[in-house]
Length: 65
Image 1 (cartoon, rainbow, N blue to C red):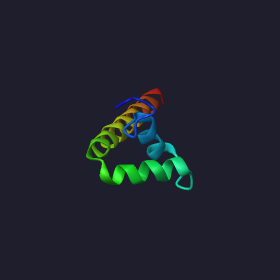
Image 2: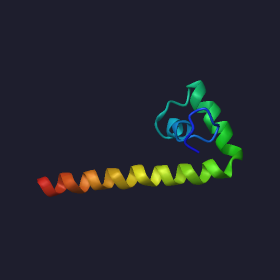
Image 3: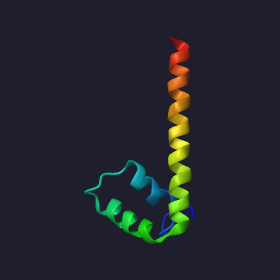
Image 4: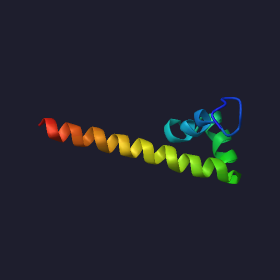
């Protein structure tokens, strides 16, 4: 699923997590996501990873205060 030319690539999914809604790549990825259960599961994994990482960073910042 990590092939950048595949409709099911992490790069396309990351566009949804980090991109702009007005961007054509964002709209294309969102349309694909509507009908692809593989990508729906993967975006949940990637979103959780980002949230977990941000939580770790926030916790580390509090510990340094």
